[in-house]
Amino acid sequence: MNEVRDVHTIVVGVDGSEASVEALRQAQGLAVPLSAKVIAMACWDYPPVYDGYVAVGIDDFDVRAGEILNEAVAKAFGPETPDNVEIRLVQGHPRYTLIEESKSADMLVLGRRGHGGFGGLLLGSVSSACVAHAHCPVLVVHAPEKA
Image (cartoon, rainbow, N blue to C red; front, side):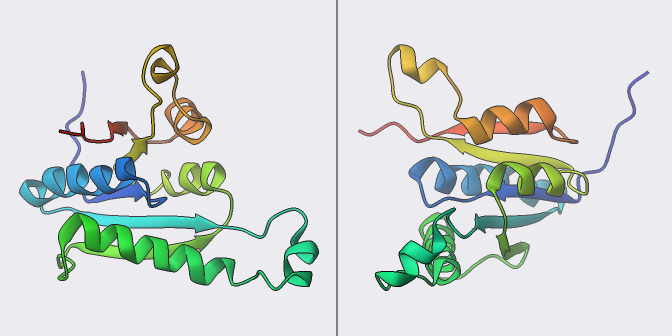
């Protein structure tokens, strides 16, 4: 017999894409009637050749990731972030970080960038890994259709 679980926490992977903005909106649509919290999470990490980036004056990867996260949240909800939405910036690869976060989440919501046609049938590497390995249900959201 299946047990009905209360949903308290919905984690959304945010990368700034239109699909991740839509994932935020969909997660909020699910969270509000359930009185659940939405964690809007962006991940960042140093590239493998970090010293090369620093040599040409490119660093602050965390700062840029935070800006992308804040811009996506503003795009999804407007200037006022809803009270039930927590913004979280985490250092680490998105695949591993989101799977780890799924251990304490009730649902994981991800945007799927999709490329249309046959390629549109395939999930991205982060979405695929999360669908296969997450410890909670995963909802993969498409970017909204352009009118």
